[in-house]
Length: 493
Image (spheres, rainbow, N blue to C red):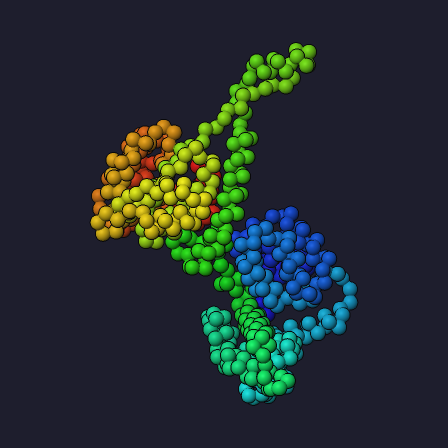
C-alpha cells in the first residue's frame, strides 16, 4: 500500500502526523485552514468514537470547514486520504480490541486483493450466484453483504491493473455494466409484489418500495466507487489521487470555462460573498485612518485634565464614495464574466454614490434602468441578455465602434468623481481599436480600470489588443474567478 508522507518526508506514525497531512491536502485543494482550526480538529476527534467513520468525518468537517460551498471539496479529499486508514491511527494508546483486529485483517485483505468478505469463498461463485446474492442483500437491506459484494464485483469485473493510467469512471462503468442494476430493480419490484398480501402492491406501496430499492442500489454504487477509490489509492498513492480528483472551489472556478453545474455553484457562492464584502467595506469606511489633528477639540477636552492635552483629537474625514460607470462586453465566452461582475457590483451598490452600466457587442446600450426597476438582480440580468440593443452590424465584438458610440452619447457624464470599469477580453476581431476614447476617459475620469477574464499569457495574442487600451488606464487586472473579482472590487470601493 502506498502511504502518504508528512512535511518531514516520513510516513505518518501518529494521529498528529495523519491530520497534519490531511490539512496539507485540504490546503492544496484551496480550502483555507488555519492553525487554530487544525488544533480544534485534533481536540474534536478525541471526543468521538474513532471507529465510526461518519462521526470522524463530520467532526473534522465541523472544525475545518467554514463555507458550505467547500463541503464537496472537503469530502473528496477525506474519502481519498482516509480510504486506507485503519485502527493504527487511533488516539488512545493501549491494547487492540477485537474490532481493531478485524479492521486490520480486512485492510490487509484489501491490499492483497482478498478481503475478509471479498475473497475466499466468494472467488468460487459464478456471476449468476453473485447476482442472486446481491438481489437478496438488496431485498433485505443487508449492508455488510452489499459491502462484501461490492468488493468482489470490483475485483472480478473492473479489470483493474497496477500502474494502468485509467480513471475510476472507466472501472465503475465496467463493473456496473456486468451487474445490470437496472434489471435488478425490476426483479426486486417483481419479487416484492409476489410476496405482498394478495400478490399485488397498492400504488402507494409500490412507490415507497421503489424509492427504498433505488436508495439501496445508490448506496451499493457508492460502495463500488469507494472500493475502486481504495484500490486506486493503494496503487497510485494518496497525493496522486487527491490531485487527480481535486475540483476547484466555487470562488476559483474560471468564468470562461465553467460548466453548468459550476455556474450554479458560482451563483450560490455570490450571495454570501456580497454580504461579506459589503460588511467589510462598510467597516473600512467607518474605521478609516485618522485625519489631521483637531486642535480646538483637543484643547476643549484637555480642560478635564487641567489643561494638559492628554487625549489628542483628530478630524475623521468622510471618504467619498466613487461614482461608477461599468462598460461590459457581453459577447460569447466573456458574457458569464460580465454577468457576475454586474451582479456583484449591484449587490454592493450602497458602497458607490452612483452606478451606471452599459453593455455592448458591436453596438452599445445603457441598461442602468433594468437594475433600478427591480430588486431581483437575476431578473435584471435576464433583461440585459434579452432586451439590450447591443448588435450594430453582425453581432461580432467591435470594441472600437462601441467605445466611440459610448463617448459620443455619454462622454459628457464622465467627470472627476467617476471611476470607469471596462470589462472584456479586448478581442476586437481585427477592427480599429479607437484607443483614443480610453485615453479621453482617463483624462476626464477619476480612474479607469480594465478587467480581463483571460489568463495574462493570452493577452495581446491573436486579435487581443488589451495592451492598446491598457496603456491609457490605471491598471489592467486579471479577473478569471470570483476570488480575483472580490479582491479587485474591495480595492475599487
